Image (cartoon, rainbow, N blue to C red; front, side):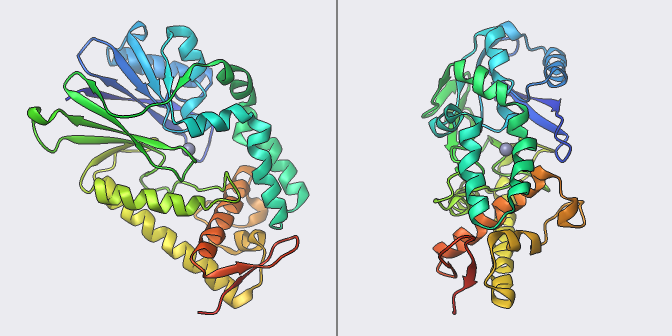
Length: 336
Ligand SMILES: [Zn+2]
């Protein structure tokens, strides 16, 4: 089996602390591929360099980079590494399209939707100022736009392994996982999955309506069901935290979690509706260390509002809630 090295970077996002990059090395001492280049900071790069060296990886042998999705903690270091090594960057074209919009145009439709769904203008302004993408806007709007990005389609052979991209939209519109399996003649059942942020241990990957007219949560649940079916008992290496002993089982837990959140959102509308998505976001119980909405830093509000809205849009697609006309939009439970 190809060797996989975990290269863990410290990142300045407190709720996460670290991001895991993974180096795939088909032959010891030979070329290697980096999955999720990581975060654009001197500290993160230094962590990556030290750990790559400790694993015997040489940067002149870096042949390619793959990003599971466009988020800052996974991707923003890619332009610098491409300048250093010339390695091409592969990712889903839908993620590339988002990057090409530029950070202001990427965030604006989401924030417009937040306003339409009842969030206060001053909160939207502070989210805009503090969003992680804004901190690295230069990396996106100047550096990434000049980076060679290619689509990754179909399976490829690497030494005695096969690398297969698995498209899992939901956490972002073009999120993908990377499956590695041994060639059939080398043995059966040896598969490992680099899950990106599609499936994480302990934390639930957030789902934000990047396209406010689409059902992002619906797409995420669909991807989770597929993961549950295809990867029961398969070990996963996630974008954050420790390895997953059973990726399919974790996907089942995440599915259950979202069913509970969907039921909770609908119950709020039954008991206290009609409500705006913003009111629902403030009333739902989020797993966070902050005790009240007033204490939430702006990025947490961005995610909570996005989650609430994504859950309501999905409930609407199931015919369980409906929205009123006018602004702000209000939601009510439809009678069963
Ligand atoms: Zn992410």
